[in-house]
Image: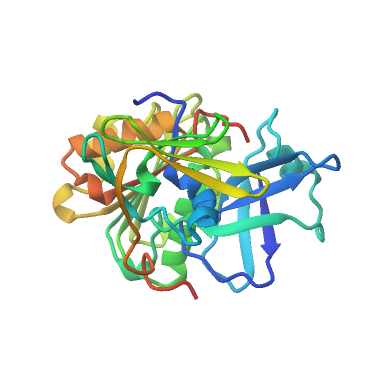
Amino acid sequence: MSDDAHVDGNAVGGMMIEAFGAEMTAARSCCAECGTVAALGALLAYTRAPGDVLRCTGCGVVMLVAVARPEGVRLSLGAVRWIEPPAGPPVSAAP
Amino acid sequence: MRSLVLDCPGWPGHLPGQHVDVRLTAEDGYQAQRSYSIATPADGTRLTLTIERIADGEVSPYLADELRPGDGLELRGPIGGWFVWEPALGGPLQLVGGGSGVVPLMAMLRARAAAGADIPARLLLSARSWDEVIYRDELERLGAGGGLEVRFALTRAQPPGWTGYARRIDHDMLGEVAWSPEEMPRSFVCGPTGLVEAATRALVELGHDPATVKAERFGPTGGPG
């Protein structure tokens, strides 16, 4: 899965804030297919489809799809075993 | 290349490495949105974006050519909690950038300088030519201040007498300029996807713990802008 067409989960951070109500790129996720644990910000992101597709860095399976709709973001769950929000602010709270 | 200084009432502050989404809405309701890294550390309600103009882009030509002082913009942010660094996190700091991928790294270096932090830092920055190196003068000035080593890789054209690298960032180059894994640097890699893939792979091959190598990809060179 190392083509040039993807970016990474950082690019979907704004949509995830809308969906979760919180900053989520530092949240850890576990792939239900292969067990790889990675920050959502590190997942492979394909943002040129209708909807932003997040794939596992280990096996490439689709883990999440975020679709912006006029009434709000819809997050479809794929092969996600769990998502664990960051324990606190990433570093000290922003001033 | 154009840097925009924005005043955002109610801005909650941000961390170096974070970005914003900028949304433009046309008169007919058509919307286009792009992400831009914040180039400056937190400074009240003020933040700076550095815009690379993509010739056939939907958003960057407007921001680079048409936006005027006093115009409004729709912003969402700050975004990002993973690709972030601030002086309290310590170092050494290992920064690798390509093209406009230097922008969030610059926010980190500016935060480091503003804090007067004595954190050792290295920046390896790739650009097509010397004229395309963003923040060139400021980087040279920061590099002369001690504690920061800046190295350039110019991939297409080099000025006469150029003594820096004249090829894309690769394994051997990172072996020469990166901190060793034993020094446990915090690594941040930002740029076009191809460069990020090559640099992160090389750092891991050189023995760096993948958990300490954070990346942000812009997509293919040129991007959708």
